[in-house]
Length: 70
Image (cartoon, rainbow, N blue to C red; front, side, top):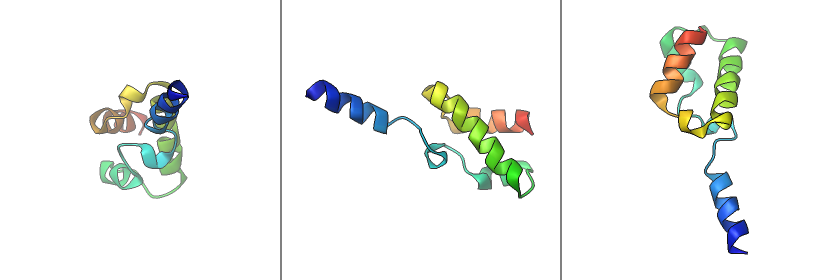
């Protein structure tokens, strides 16, 4: 049972939702993004990357990648 509990705890610590990202839409606006669907699309793209590699959920990397995607 402890293996299952460890797995559940580990999964809960991994990013799975937009609110789990180390940045928000406000950060994208500060980078010069315009309000609109592009903010959500960019955050979804970043979340996809972070779900694939949780170590990328760092503010510096996310801001750099968001700037590149802009």
